[in-house]
Length: 324
Image 1 (cartoon, helix red, strand yellow):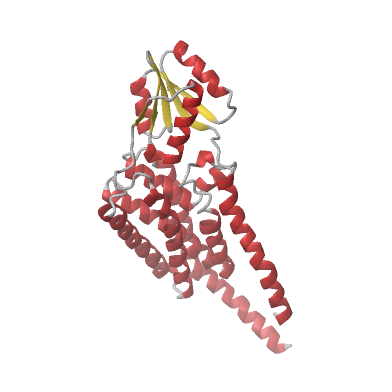
Image 2 (cartoon, one colour):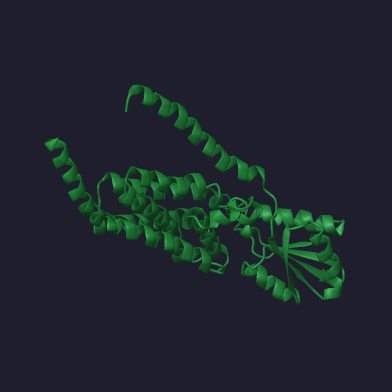
């Protein structure tokens, strides 16, 4: 590539990448608002009808789920079916929230239900965050390091030239070790995660494995372009679209949905489930992460086969160039 083309590449690509990064990180946070946010309403139909009508006036802000009584609504919050629930009681409405599902969502529901009732509403935190991390900062801050860990592992495996079984083993062991270290820091030391220790380590490790396998697998079949594509999916899109710091339902569409199909978003949901909700609602994100890991490791094992197929073609081109 000539020096002129190199300069043009820098002048064009760098601003384009910065623009993409700013769009991915800034735009979703500038447009936070509830969009089909699951919210429960519990009590007799006659008692809850006015509240449901008021919530419906807010368009698609809330996805209202009806429950027969307070016990059913409480269970729904604990099992992550809804972010909160409004109970119709003789003394007026009462709100159930789960700050462990997202402090920003709990605050939003408190304000929204209070506005509908015209006064402050008694609120109970059904699944609170641990006292050591009352704002959920540890989990919110974990997405970026986990994404970076996946990219670094995938890039190192590629740069070091590991192929086939050795590459798969290196990615898997490095991700597992990272999960153990992260659980030791976040749970044992900081006390920010309060679920089963081994389940947390597994969720953290699987999140890293999904990202690392994606980067290394794409690099194995596409070369440097694959490494760039994997990093783009995990970091520039997966991290800001994860919804961990707010909630997927608060992000603009289709960002909220897309983010849950990428490793950081699925990983954040899985970690939240195992750390605070006894594994409830973990099946979906677990399947997504396992799919990324399996697909990436499969591509990684195909690397040597593709190398052998490319070799004869390269040899033929060399012979032809010499003959010419």
